[in-house]
Amino acid sequence: NGALKESWHQIAETFDHHIQNHDDPEKARKWTVLSPPTGAGKSESIVIYGAMLSSRTKEDHPAILVVTRLIDDCNMMADRINQFGERDTAIAYHSDVSNKVSLNVLKKWPVVVITHRAYEMALDFLGHEGRIEQTWPYFHEYDRNGYLPQGSTKEYPDQNPFISRRRLVVIDECLDIVDHH
Image (cartoon, rainbow, N blue to C red; front, side, top):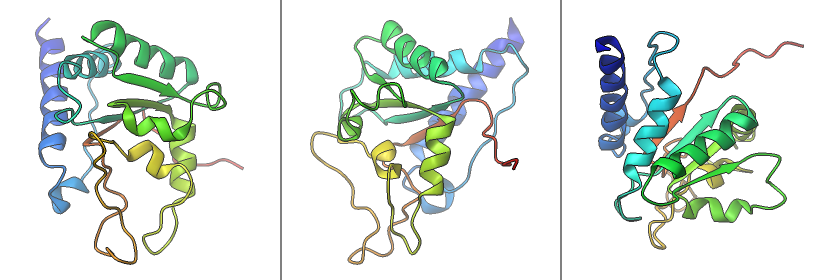
């Protein structure tokens, strides 16, 4: 199907663009919204893209944070990336595994898959004045053989705490940005 190929090509080009421009402060802060039609395989394209990257070494992997709607989606996304990849590179992290998986190990995984709720809570806990608190750094850090880039601190105030150490952040399905009370 030509439309499907075009959608997946657009998705892969967008992912590549964000990875390549990660270190450019102006380009890194721009978000891209992709809206191919329902059934175009947006979630499946994330799986295939993540699986294709599994052949890269730890140092060369761009590192991806994938944010999915539900725990089941989170588990399925990580499992399928590992199933189709050359090696296991993805881990699912959510409330059902938080007592078994330490936040500290997430930085060792090239692909971390979390739920919308976990991401929203991490955003809620972002500190002021460049300080990051709670889970945000655990979701965004990636340890390329012991090398963790410097985050924003008193000593390095110009570092942008919102730029992930993971070169690609993909939010599958839109976040619920309006809270109803």
